[in-house]
Amino acid sequence: MNIQPWQTEPLQAFLQQEGINSQLYPMIRGRIATLNGDPIREQMNPEQLEHNTLNRELNLSWSNHPPGHNRLVAGNWWTRDTPDAEISVEREMAEELGLIPGDRLGFDLGGLTVEARITSLREVEWASFQPNFYVIFNQAALQEMPATFITSFRLTPDQNALATQLVREFPSLTLIDIDQLLQQIATWIQRLGDSSALILSLTLFCGALLMLLTLRQALDQRRYESALLQTLGASARQTQQLDLLELMLLGLVCGILAVLTAEATLALLYLYLLKLEPDLHPLMWILLPVASTGFFTLSGALMRRQLTLPQCYRLLRTG
Image (cartoon, rainbow, N blue to C red; front, top):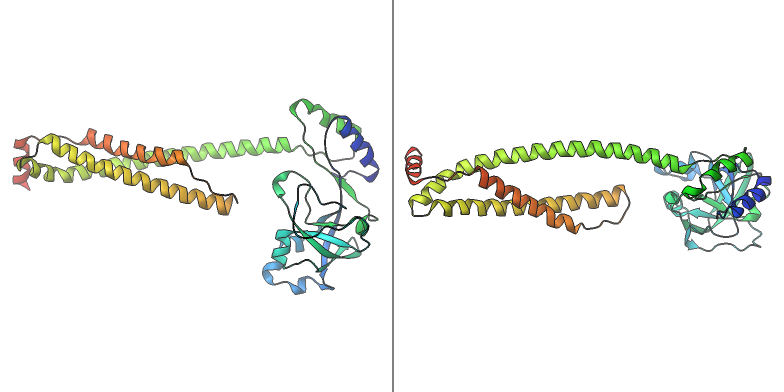
């Protein structure tokens, strides 16, 4: 950041010499002032007035070519010899402020007013680590304005020393090492993940303990039914198999419900929090029902005690 105009050529030569591909973008700060000749704030509703672009200065740029990492979704890009001031606006900003191609936006650039017509809308990927702008002008509109330049590039691990050399040769520019920020964020996320895993493990343990107590109570209630079946001619093994079959089916149903709940929760997180397309998890559809069925069946087999015929008679007499 803060690359001065007289530094652009030597900086580009330095990067090209080191085999680094990058593009320098001019940048000037300005505030949106008017829409179609009238103050823009008077034309916005209360919700639109809260939009970030109306409450601060924006980083503006100019270019005769659309950025390669932006996609045009409406309108057309201008030609190099366009004499009038034209702009391309980020799509979400245009939708939230109710802007359409053909509208004219006025900008306050440090006391100077520049008005330009919207000719296109762009889809901007803000997480691309490329310089991105809400508004881009054609070159003829702002090229006379004082500006600094900004760029981004990627260094491989064996090129890390170039960052120090770059700052030494161009001490006035600002170099932001995204890799260090990402490593710090990754450390925070890892700690949050470990904490969440511990909480989830404790929750799972408590849930399993509660389920064991519930199964123990359910098996105690079924002892009377088993005693009745054995006095009517069923064997102790048959009654045990009947109880285990019921627990097996119960575990299978619980596992399927768990998968459906997990998939629905993940889909909501993907759609509304991460803004990603939801995806199915086939392994979970296999593991959860199998694990739940095995847990219910094994727990029942360990906790259920077989009744002898005299025990069945005593249990039926006592009610």
